[in-house]
Image (cartoon, rainbow, N blue to C red; front, top):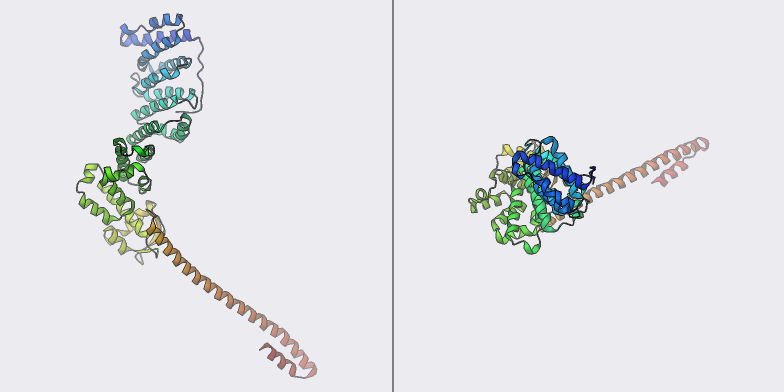
Length: 437
């Protein structure tokens, strides 16, 4: 796969190497169609006239036969062709045909063909300068090979560099969208639903505001929304609601937008209302009803946890909101914790869910009011704590002062006793006691 820029080192003059490759192409072609094996004869006069690009054109046109070359000779033959093409000032003129060849099945090696094709495409990608936008087309060919061979794992590490590559190529929004959609397709066919959704979302963001009402935009918005809804572990829909193409569904596909609103901010009762008023919507839209119902229950439980001021949610409230038997409450609480929507612990003794942390699905005026209420509650509690601490501090200070006085009294009182023994008087101690009062 793509890596640092490198070079191909092949000895020989252009004329010698071109003649050698033409001879090899003819040898391979003879096994398929002997009458078509005339590449060497066609380029010979062109090489004599130093018409290199014309000779290259003949070689590149005939190069699709290399897909039938023996596996052990495949890489060497293509490397030679790439080396010759690099010597032309019109490199971009010839590479698309090579990429097209490599995106097609390698007939001589059905098993190892994708690996052979990726090896050559990687070589082409790496010999091009980082800012050469031809890399875009080469990478597209890589995607087609990966998609055909279901080898998404080979692609995954390279996606980390995609943003920097796009920046270097100065790719416009339309080409970015094509690239993101192809990656989404590759990921979807490989069962990588989370990655597919990520690149569908990125493709959505490339649509200009003035084009959000187009059929392409509407189709892509619905596809992204459907992907998010059908994904069992996707619970955050804020990234969709903030998208202009999604907002445009209010007019073009209002049912889809209404369903999004339910999953973004509403509860299970609202979802059931939607289903009652849209009898066949889920089946016609290709949505999985069991996945959606489970997600809606988890989201409803998350909303309950977030809106509970006491942070203690009784089992009976959960059972009523989720429309489940009381004995199933703990199973659903465990599920919502596993989903990362809420943190807390179950108290079987008290039949309550003690909430440590909860996530707001949306954050608007209602949520700000709830936060203000909690802050006021915490403030009142803290003031009470501070008052207790202040009272205890005063009490401790008084006790400390009293202890010091008692200690001083014992010390001074001991001195008065010595005076009585020497003088026999009692006035000293009596006066001292009065002073202490």
